[in-house]
Image (tube, rainbow, N blue to C red):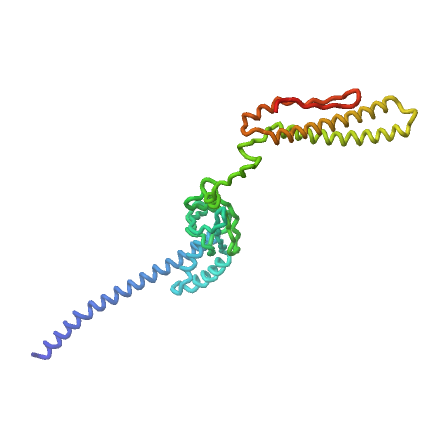
Amino acid sequence: MSTASTRQRVIRFGRSRLVPAALLAVVASWSAGAALADDKKVCLDSYVEAQRLKQKTALIEAREKLILCSRETCPATIRDECVQWLSEVDQSLPTVVLLAKDADGRDIVDLRVTVDGEPFVDRADGKPVPIDPGVRVFRFETPGFEPLEEQAVIRASVKDRVISIVLNRIGGTSLAEAQSSPASAPPDSDVGAGRPIPTLVYVLGGVGVVGVAGFGTFSWRFSSQRSDLDGCKPFCSEDDINAADTSRKIAFVSLGVGVVALGAATALYLTRPEDEAANTAYRGLLLDAGLTPGGAAASLSGVF
């Protein structure tokens, strides 16, 4: 084999190997450049979007964008500003701690919570949760309980704000009430559906209290008028004498009415029947009081 033929075969072999390798190098270089360009675009887009979200106080979304533009692969000018803004957002981003109990004071952990209609958390486990500042409407839902909505003003930079609520069971009864048996009244109790208290007992009781109070008032007035009469004897006017006598009579009438009314109320209470229908018999009672030539009289008549 000649030297020329050998050299030609070597050249052809080199070309068959070097051309694909060069092509691969070009493709790899182009891919790396394209990926770098895409990454720079992500950095720039995140940088711009983070500023817009920060101005809207959408701090949670702004934080996500700032994390993207704070990476080492981003240009230094963009990365430095994003790192500074990320620190500011972390300081301004408030957090809340959700606590829920039932009417018996038991903690409710499995709880679906939405904020302004958007899903927020699925558990009230006492851990702080980031939230955007502003007026927020929390809705709490869990099976077996009535849902509850609560509005709260979330302030920037306030960390671990506690939102505590109490949920009522559907039907309005607590677990302790549902598990306990109904309490029965003692056999000899005067209170209960078996022996209702007639309305007339309250009416007579009120009349009795007013009568006794009237006795005290007019007794005091009569005492004062009598002192005046003692001072003017024997030249007191007829009007002053009659006024004092009227006060005395009204005082005794009031006392009679009060004593009779209170006594009747006590008698009705102690002798009331076992059912409501029998209470109608007491509605025929009549209390009568008036002045007599010698003072006053009161009487009570009716069916017991």
